[in-house]
Length: 414
Image (cartoon, rainbow, N blue to C red; front, top):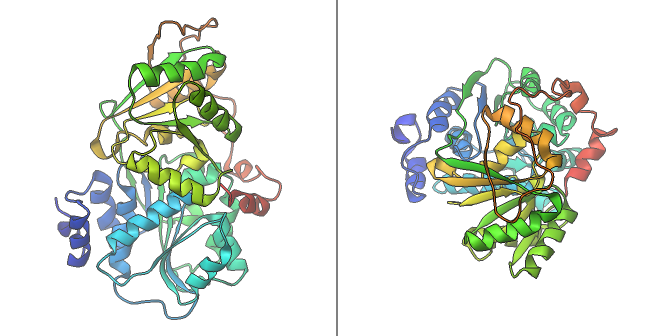
């Protein structure tokens, strides 16, 4: 099947051909006709399946005729959890609309607000924004919502994990009821379905299968916690890894690991919310170009990192909740390519491993590296493991901060 057969205009198809987009992915084949029909959409799709084009292409098709009628208005809003993802989505949409006079704007926190306000003055066709910054702009009367035709919630599960539920609900309550609504998430969990009841009424529902084990080879090494950095250095050097995206839980831990790797002759950089936007953009550009081989990133900051043909990701720390593991390993093995996901596992990670393997439905292959055998062995996990907090209602998720608006303001630096 070609993109032209999905009902896209020649100008869009031509732009896709210049980008070497020839065959639509499964999510694109299913979502594009649904969105073009004008229906609301609830879609479950993993990272790397082509979901940005799945909502972006029909959105551009719909907006290709017409323009904003008044200043400070927008015709479509895409909400995404992090600055990196906002920039990535905006960059892709700009390329897809390269043959059309559509204006796409990326809007996020952590940078001077004035240039973004100025860019909004004449009106925008597609606004890609983090929830916190969009809320600030709305309350400062820099943007108005009455011309919004389409709302897209991208990586909705991650936005809920970051405590944006109250902000999202507030923004939705200010938008026209007649808009089209598209929600994309890695999973359709009970929390996502609760959000969809108000944000995406009467939707078409699409679910795309998780990446197969053939695409992503997953394995782990058990090791003492204090030997993880030495093991990582050993793997990089002995297995001659050319590139790796290394996930770690904290900013302090990222800086410490970069220093430990440097002492062993391995140059890496830390990528987290404590670094300026300009630095993060440069690091990401260097990593994409291959000028930087090893990037140590916190999970929140790494959302939106999209590197073509990334060979491997490493979980230096196992994440919580388990769906975050799915997001992480989805940075490799993208669009049918092969990839490798390695986890360094100490005994205190056991509960997280149980939840991850239960979520996957299979055990992850364990390998032993001579000289790094743990003094505290990690037992085999249980696939039927259920955390006590698994049934936490969505109402509690919104209470992670006493003041969700303050939480949103703080999230601007993510």
